[in-house]
Length: 299
Image: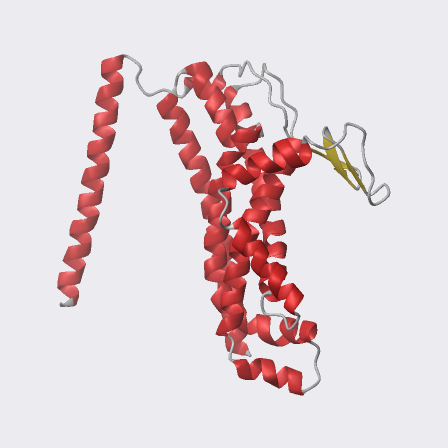
């Protein structure tokens, strides 16, 4: 196939996609006109009329619907960002443990990954919320002095109070995604030639130092692309937090749609908001991946 033929095929495919999108938009517009609804976003300036249990910025039911949706977006961003950090730490630890010389560590890592990946995330979220956190006593427990206080009302970490809803979603997403990240890390470690492992061991370098300075830097190019997919999955899975009452973007959007009856506009806003979140995650991971590749080329 010549270059000119490939170019025309790409042009035809692009034209077909544009035509299909135009057809769908036209059908949507016609149906909205027939029902007398039309496509309008003026409802975003109306008072929300409902409370949000958690909000990082001041919010009142009299505030606009747009501000309420923004509060939900911030809540989603908070749990996704924290989930990415904790899931990465947990996944790296479990992935490294699966290749440890210690049989106990290998067994624990294998049990964790095997168990968590077999249980649906929704069931895990319900377990963490109704059993693990709501099952705590009402009087705060302080297992590590004043640094951590836990009860069925809130979790306090070094003076920062976290709701049980946020805590359940954060732990559930972190544990679930961490199991998949552990497999990604294990695969990346397996991609490093065994000679590299034997080399640092023959030099008397400890396992921990050898992994940090020799093996992991070489495994990163194989780990990062798959890691990006796991982060995107975590962002999409965060919509399940509505099951435990966490006021994320999906939960707030659902309430807004119920209040206004503007389902199409609400879902468009939801779609664009998560598209923005995913673009942020994907763009950040691409920058990190390019940085790692350039560093490896310099070495």
